[in-house]
Length: 104
Image 1 (tube, rainbow, N blue to C red):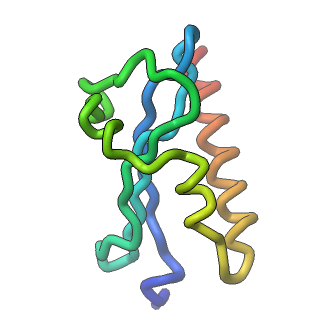
Image 2 (cartoon, rainbow, N blue to C red; image 1 turned 135 degrees about the vertical axis):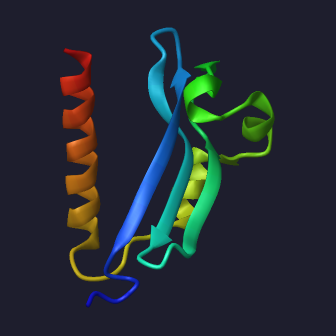
């Protein structure tokens, strides 16, 4: 059986940023195999938020007023462990592919 740190689930909520409402990270949550929260933080994306997507994301202006700026959150977190950076890159690539498929 996998240890609790070998299996991690991530969920990210996005808001629309800029005139084209490009997706910007607004919340990132990580839980282990037992459902224990490893990380859960509201993150203010760079650029002007033009759509909170509250109906889907649950994100509101109040969340973003108290959120950690993206640049700070990026510095606070570092990847460690066997191939975790590669795993994260693969996860992001899958996310990008799913977004492309959804857009068709």
